[in-house]
Amino acid sequence: MSSTASTALSPLYPNVKLVPRPNTERGGADHGWLKTFHTFSFAGYWDPRYTSFGNLRVINEDRVEPGEGFGTHGHREMEIFSYVVSGELEHKDSMGNLEILKRGDIQLTSAGTGIRHSEYNRNNKSMVHFLQIWAEPHTRGLKPTYFTRHFTDEEKTDKLVTVVAPVGSEGVKEEREGSGPAPVQSNVILKSTILSPGKSVEHIFGAPASGETQRKCYVHVIQTSGYNTGSAKGNRVRVNGGLELSEGDGSFAWGAAGDKLQIENVGTTPAEVLVFDME
Image (cartoon, rainbow, N blue to C red; front, side, top):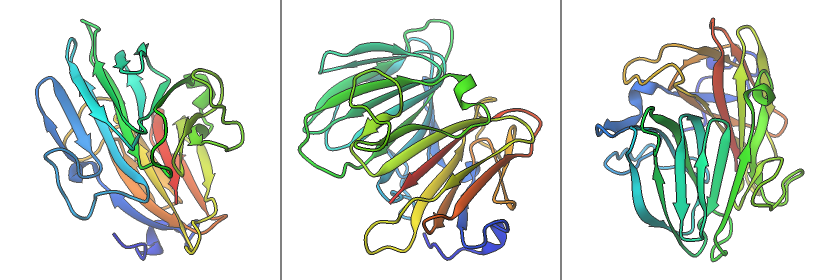
């Protein structure tokens, strides 16, 4: 995809290029036990235009029915994190970790040389809704590691909070549990906000990779009001004074160091939004 999109979508910051990724164009399937959307090519969904974005490889928005889940399977050389929106998600892996994740939890597995894990909804009453995100590591052959973090709705309300950041970044601790962002072995940052109507937050683009003039971002509006395969509806935000996104919509963005993404809630209900920043 090109970074030379029309600046009409970004009137507040004309140097920032935005390319929308509408909800209706995401891949996905309804398997009965699993309802899933794919921002990038995954499983049976393939689109050569959307295989990755920088080192971001997967953004799957999943809903798993009670008593169902992903059986034990393997991963290697990938950074895998789960962002729980609602319900309960059981994570069990070959490193001996067994945990029930709930709303506000971030679970990050640095697969390194290889792990096996399963993810199940053991709650018999309600569906679990979560985002599964994969990023390519900057270093191969690492020892597998596991981290969890928790961020309350209050912490994220009308603030853009960093929930995942590269190892070595300010405030990042390589502890299994603790405060601050979850540590990732990849040049990707994930921020989260719950925006009240009329409120806005800003993200400032970081420095681009060596030899590049721009850095990449991706904005995603979570489908908090229910599963919808049609045109996006529900919570609505405006990016940089132009592009409007509703639940399930996203947008690719390019900007130089110091450029900004402003995200404003122009709807009538709180909107939960993720911002990825990467080389």
